[in-house]
Image (tube, rainbow, N blue to C red; front, side, top):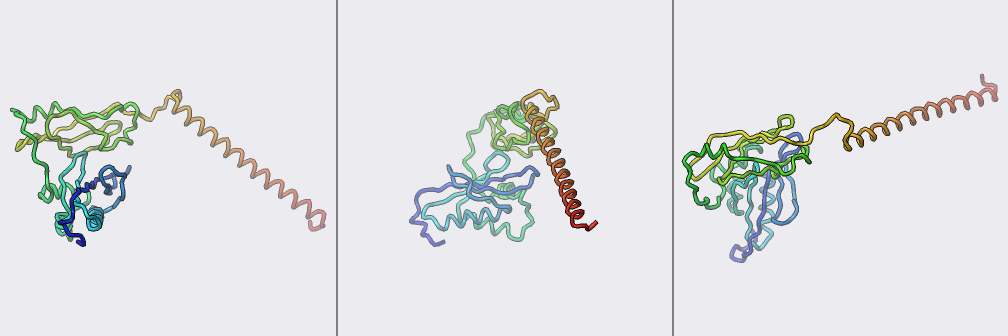
Length: 246
């Protein structure tokens, strides 16, 4: 690195987060705290290299936090970022699993655990956990992202998987309380806007009107082109008759 670490003072915070498109293809956003996303990379290693590149140009300390399934999975400084890159070289770790991998392998720094909450049965507490999306009646299920999912548990919630089944979001999760880990449970969120067939609500009326207008335009231009071709054919015939060619 070109900068002397003794000159660094202010901590610059960065975030690398998973992003999925509508086809569940994964990529990684990188952004600085309180700023807009500055880059998107198909490969996790490229996103981490971007953090290293930025770190080498600044005189401040830098640290990047990794975000997966609605939760942060630890952070590293630039030195540990290099270590992660070395571990990933030549490995077969898929992009969908890489953040979970570096978390499981203790390649990231984690915050000091919260004070344990006495609990006799962690599974009972897990069953009480409720997940929700604010104003689901105003959203289509395809518009819901991980960051929109919230929960009400006092314990550390680990979301294992989020899937869409018809008009339902199914969340697989477990709770962690110190050394205690619950079984995996599922919670379903419903109540999202459906693709209705009523033809009476405002959205359906707009769609029907737009479709009708499109069809009318297509019919108009079809007849216009036919009429134009017939006119041209008649003109050609008239010219040929005048010149005694037919």
